[in-house]
Length: 84
Image (cartoon, rainbow, N blue to C red; front, side, top):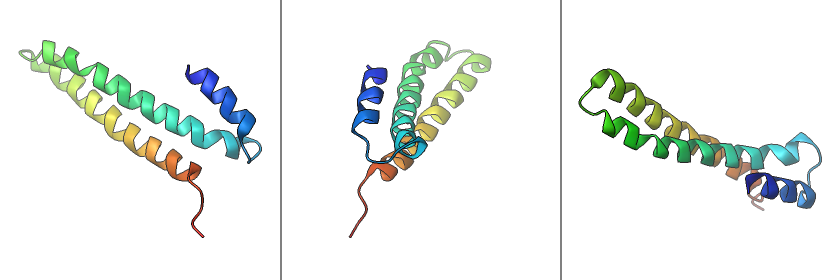
């Protein structure tokens, strides 16, 4: 699904080259980071009684969601039209 939307966004883009492709990739990558961070959270909860497993998983989950938020936000700001 992501590859189809990426191909369609390249066709409709106004900016040529990497500048036209980068914002869409950033938004998709940021959303993928957030989704993966949310999906591994139950793994950390399953090992809640063992801190040597649950703490690294929890930290990785938090870091992925946090970084994904910023990556997707920067990509979205690049896509947004300029103010006049």
